[in-house]
Image (cartoon, rainbow, N blue to C red; front, top):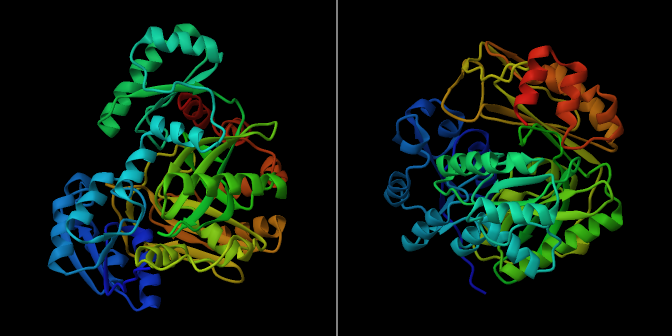
Length: 464
């Protein structure tokens, strides 16, 4: 059993996740190096890291996605490892390979596993071999419209066209009739090629009103693996998550164990190590199907940390150092209920970005409240990156109390100078269907029809 002790870690990311990694590194006595674009020169992750270096201008392609610049920074500062956070290069098998070639530990799974699970067609095949339920669909990327039509007829409409290398809702189209299939294939492929430099698409059966449930796993480099329960990620707009909670209000203990056991078995089958997330669709009959795996830490990891008392970032680092997992599945306990709201710099009615300077910024506190953010009074939210400026996370004994606590926290949060989605989250907290835990991935569409302006409804309809 080979273990190592990291002295210094470079964080190849920005914003709240970079700060989140720094906090754990400080507790572990590990020095940190922050990289930043010129737009992020005054960011908190730059302030709190032990060392920092500018790696390029604001556009991501010239900074946070600039592999030569990041590797040069890592070598200049003599780091032992790189933590990629989420987004940017976190699921780049090529970046993981480069790190390995440069004798820098990539804090994540092996490059070959990232590559396999990043290709949705390969991932579906691997999960099927591991005995995980998958939706009926194409076993390989589609070559022709005729092939797609034949398969769609076998599966039955509606079907969904998906990018093989996709994610985040890009390269996806729902198809309800034969007449729509050709244009959907072309549009999805074009969008996928632009977003992922890979135009391959496949189709699978479309579930009308599923829930989106994900299982957090941790696996060491010696074959041991545990799951940390599930996260309910059903409430989304345009396939982008708005808020998450743990545990799910609809999972029985039996179903939780089945999904968790399936995720752990899949991990072992593919030789996975480090933190990862299996995403499943849950239909109205309680059947679950593999959707994709995220080979990195998730934005919503705090809700799992709140109900399990785990430090997922710490586990990532220890696993990368070669340490054994250190605990068994029986030792994982779920306590109480946690909810996370993503606070975005967006107009809460039109969802258009709202960058600018924060003239006031007051964070909520009190029992059971956690805020992950890199913003501060006077900070200027740049227009170049994701619009999320904070995550408000609450923990309580019950879901009902957690909702009340989130409402209280959101009401106490003051953000001035820009528009944010705080008013939207407050409305969701008061929604009867949300409070009852009775919702599907269609929640926001229904919610906007009930509560939104005409413009909101039009935007929601256009996103389908």
